[in-house]
Image (cartoon, rainbow, N blue to C red; front, side):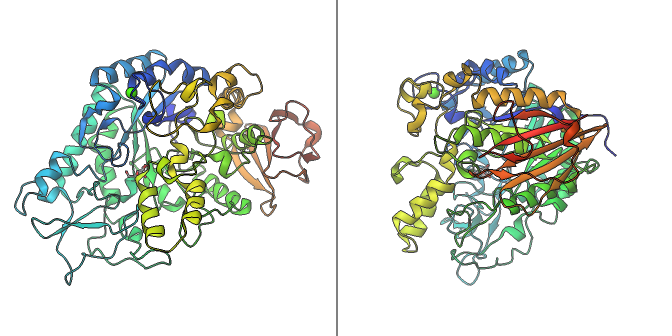
Length: 558
Ligand code: GLC
Ligand code: CA
C-alpha cells in the first residue's frame, strides 16, 4: 500500500540542459550563473524541482554525459562556488534541485579509466569491462547506441573495453564492489551538500549478462542488438536495493531512473511502492512508437491509437502500485509540438496547449523540458555542420558514408528525430541570439526566435507560457487530477484522445483533438448536463458536441 504522500508526487519538475539555457559571460555556452539569472522565471512558471543535466567536469564528447570528475564542476559552466550559490538560491526560492547521475559509464578521461587502461594488472583494471578478442575479433557483436561497435581495442594490452555509448564513454563494471562503494560515497557527498535527489542516467543498464551473448542482427545495422543483455540485467535489482540501503534511504530525495528497455512490468520492479529501489521511472514507450527500418531515424507520423494504448497502459498498470513520470520532451528527443502536435504558425500554440492538457491531466509527476513551455519547435537546420550531437554525426557517417542512405534522406530523418532539435538555445527575447548569449552560441539559435520567445509570451494572457502556468496551478489544487483513477475512452478513435479521471466524488473528462479537422465528440453516458468546463485551449466557450482543430478540453462534474 502507498504510504504518506511524498513531496515529489505533487512537484512540477523542469529540466535544464545547461549548455543551452543561459550564457552569462559571452562565451556562447550556457552556465550556472546564467541559470541563476533565470530562477525567478522558473518560479513564476510554477516550477518546484529543477532537474539539471550534468554539470560535472567533462571533456564533452556527449555534452557532459561523459564525466571525468564527479566532484568538480565543468569549467565552461563555472565553479563549485557558483554551484553552491545556485543551490542556495534555488532553496531560497522554495524550489529543489535534482542532479543527473551518470554512473553506467564515465569519460575515458576519468582517472579511473586512465589507470585501468594502463595494464592488465592495474588495481583499477576491474573498474571497467575488459574482454579478450574472440576469434581475432570483438568479444561480441553488440552495437553502440551511437552506432558502430560497442567495443574498442586498446593497443597496449590487446584487449577490448565495452562502451555502450561512444568510445569515450567506457562502461563501469558494476560487478566490482569497489566501484559501487565509490559511487555511493560520491552520491552521499552531493547529498551532504544538500541536493534533493538524482535523475539516474540509463540506470536500467548497470548489470550486464555475464555471458555477453551476441545480439540479434536487425535490418539497417551491421552490429547486433545487445539491449536484451544489458538492459534489466540479472543483478540490477540487487544493485539498486544496495544503493537504496547505502545512500538513497539516508536522504529525503526524489529518485527517477531513466528506463531504457523498461515496460510497466519492469517499472513495477524498479519503482513499485514497496520495491525499496527508486521513486519512479522515466520510460520511452510513447517516444519510440512507429520506428522505421533504421529505428529512430525516420519521418513517420505517430499513430494516435498506439500512443493512447501505451500511455493508458502505464496509467492503469501503475495504479496503486507505482508512480508515473509524465513527459513529452527531454534533451534526447525532438520538440513535442513538432512531433505530436502541429508546428505551423496557425496551429503551433493551440496544439502545444492541447498536448499539455492531454498529458498533464494524467496521474504522475509532470516534467517540462526547457522551452517546451514556449512551444519551441524543431531546429530546422539544413546543413549537417549546424548539428553538434555526436550521435547525429556518427549515424550520418554510417548511413551516408556507408552508402545506405542519401544525404537528403538522412537529413530529413535528423531534422525529424535528431537530439539537437531540443538542444538549440533557449529563446528568451527577440534580441540577437534570442538573449541566450552575447557571443557566438555553441549551436545556432533557432531562426524563429524573433517570434517565439519568453518575453513576448510572459506578457500575453493567451500564450503557451501563460497556459502552462495556469494548468499547473489548477493541477495542484485538483485532487481528481493528482489522485483520481484513469480510464481510456474511445480507444480506437483515430483522431481523438479521450479519457476520464475519477475520485473523491469527482469525475473529469479530458478530450483532445490531435487533428486539424473538427471531430464529433460522442461519449455515451457521460453526465454532460451536470459538468462544467474546467480548462480548455480555445478559451471558455467549448462545445461538448465536437472538438475544433487541435482543441483540448477538460470538463468536471463534482
Ligand atoms: C542518456 C542521456 C543521453 C546520453 C546517454 C549516455 O540516455 O539522456 O543524453 O547520451 O544517456 O549517457
Ligand atoms: Ca558561458
